[in-house]
Image (cartoon, rainbow, N blue to C red; front, side, top):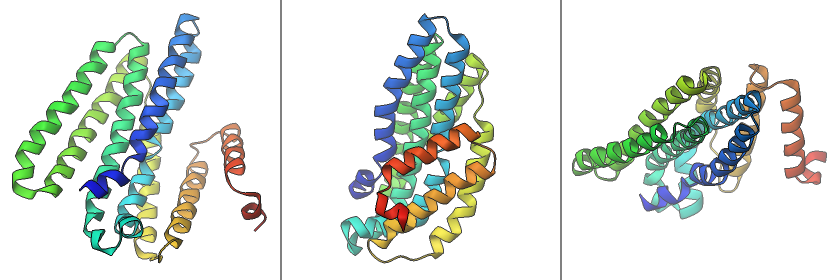
Length: 237
């Protein structure tokens, strides 16, 4: 369980880095009276968080390979735990972004109640499921509680700002479903797993473009960001 938990930290790091910046930006625009700008930033932030959905499918399909690559074959049974905990991390990231958006609309108490609800559901789930199923029960309880609160958080954002990430969620679920089987059936030894995940992640981004998630300007910015990250020799290849 500890091995899976250590590998599932990426969405949590995203929340820690992104949410405070989002809240500061929303607060600044709110003080300036730029309501439309606030809505635009909030909408795009919500799309980014919900848009992580396909990567939960990719991690679920390759979780055993990921654990084996990092910790060795003896830890491969931690794969299902990683799949659940990574999905839970994405759900928490969505909740964190939604809480920042709600707080910008002076709904801090509602956002705080969602946080307390997450803790209460997780505790109740752990007390119920761990005695029966051990580590698997803990992972299931974590994932279910995070998912419930994420859905409630999206509902709060819709009530406060009339912003919906449903189209992004549908596209993410479609892409995740389409990528799951190729990721599962394409076995890659050792470090080639990194190449597989990079390629399938690129396919997910391209899929979002095909499905109309990105505007032409957004797609140009994404390509520019990828170009700055990918080494020049890889681009030439």
